[in-house]
Length: 268
Image (cartoon, rainbow, N blue to C red; front, side, top):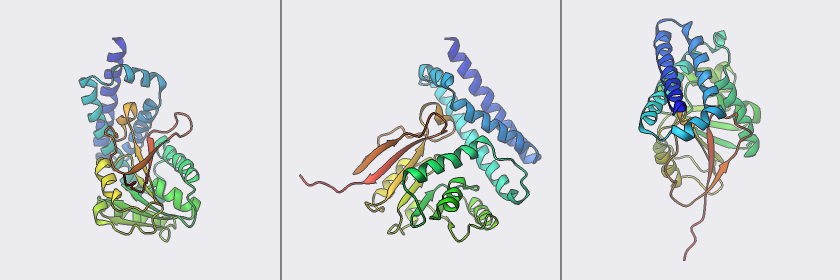
């Protein structure tokens, strides 16, 4: 029983600190460094085997579920604010790269090697945000063309400026758009759905009608303890998909990945 209250206390403290630091950061830019460290602490927390055991024991109770959802919304909102600040100040190097962005970049390297993404690939990234680490890593290190979609207009504007700063505007493009309004799928070889996309099942349903059989759909999500910093994928994916659970090395990733490939319908 003691571990239940340890978990509850930890979640409450982390949520409170992130919420307060996010509020302070709007008043004082220097607090973004403190916020970055606290978000990095959350990354460490969700990768802990000890915390995973506590979650497996107590994570299903309603009190912890409710608190976990609140922490996720707080951390996602804080991350979006921090990414916008970091994007605006990229040319000044005011924030060091934390473990969250470093983990994203490393996961992207594993993924582009695993999926064979190269200079002739065409990648669609859904939910790219204001500091699109995965998109930039793939474009810079493989030469692939990357199209990024995000519904947040400010994030799109900041990302375009950032691509120019990094000299990647020829390889990475940004559109303020929902997936239902995007139709250029003929040459898309890979689709990434970000872990911070909330309506994953709706996006997957939309893609089912649009992607070709050659397209790999890479869905990032976080179940269990990892749902504290990622939107989960708790319902079964329906439709004519071949599904493969992708196992990244060790427990170093902050999200999980499933790969979807469209199958031909077999007539009875």
